Image 1 (cartoon, rainbow, N blue to C red):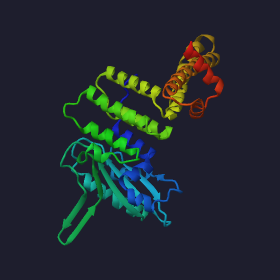
Image 2 (image 1 turned 90 degrees about the vertical axis):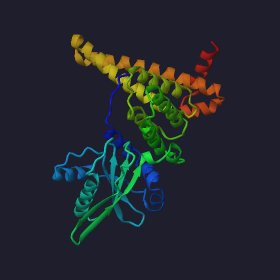
Image 3 (image 1 turned 45 degrees about the vertical axis):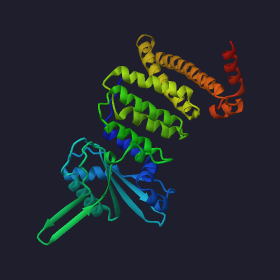
Image 4 (image 1 turned 45 degrees about the horizontal axis):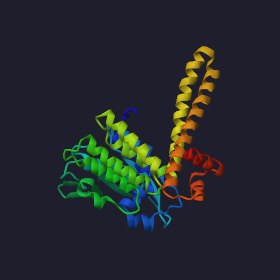
Length: 332
């Protein structure tokens, strides 16, 4: 598999938005439990941040999020999330937090909660306020902070919150101590095993799996391939079968890509429309065969683990005929 490098800014933007409820419970547990109204959807206002940064002409590359959160008392708050993903000290960060705050307050005239999450490796770098003083004019702007480096893996592991796996990934990545590719591979695989045994829904598993894969890129392509191989092996033998849907979707996606390529090639000689259709049909058929083989491997693993026929059919959404077919193939 090609080693595609995704910026940490994009990874953070994606994971915060995709797991925003878990994010809130992780960093603001009491406030989230007691005040947030989850019957109303969150509104992500990134375009409003873009307007502010455009007016200030600043080249801001942080993974910032602005989210409108409704409260149970009928009011609303804008939660401004400044997520620091840079690995160096930014002496202007506190001022930028304040500048963004007062521009948002002036624009919306709403309550604002500001939060800075520091994922850098500089131990003493953790600004939590902006101070202004001139003559008798004084101002102190304070905001909530969280420094990943200040916490151990045990402390970051919050029970029953999937966002813990995000934080554990970041903390492991910060733990240099001579960890090369093989050591990084080990903790990634350990987290993937835990993820696939967690019982979370398929969508959340996809988000976290993508984050774990991409947050630290291996220098060796061989190690990248080994990670993918290990993930595939783990998927085949896991007991929580929600991941089967992920396999099915990925196989279908790969089939579409391959079908398009085959179709375009044949289209040059026999007509693009006909060739593409034939290629897509062939590729989808191949993808279905691949998916069926993956499914058979999963069924075999479940049978070996003592799952009943009824449980297997219910979890994998298969009929008795397909299950008997797999059983027969095992005997042969």
